[in-house]
Image 1 (tube, rainbow, N blue to C red):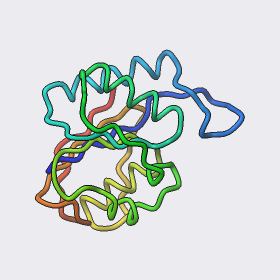
Image 2 (image 1 turned 180 degrees about the vertical axis):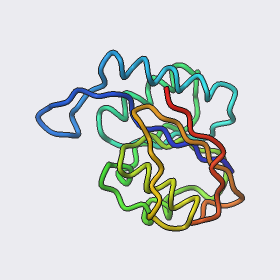
Image 3 (image 1 turned 120 degrees about the horizontal axis):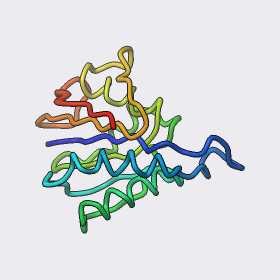
Image 4 (image 1 turned 90 degrees about the horizontal axis):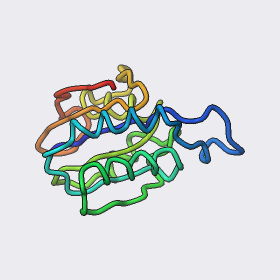
Length: 149
């Protein structure tokens, strides 16, 4: 099983609510650079934070890849989401892309790789992490790469 974790691209600094912040033009370019690393990867589904900038990021990835698989909004992928709960929501097989936010993504990578939250992975906007393992269990996945645009 592979899990790719993509932090959304650069977003506007302010909006009425944090969830309403949209990608900037630079953020869209960042996302397309990261999406290029997913070309040819066997994705089964994309799980997305409901925040606008994450939905926009995922839509750009879907378009760049010509992805026709499952495209699912996941309320447990927000910046404040609990990584241990999110782990329980992952499918137990296949290849999945998560599109979310800091600090969640850094903590979630730490949980998957180390089994704890004490070593969060630094993730810039539009950074893409690739993890692999038999099962999506705490401490059971190997971090193969982190790419920054």
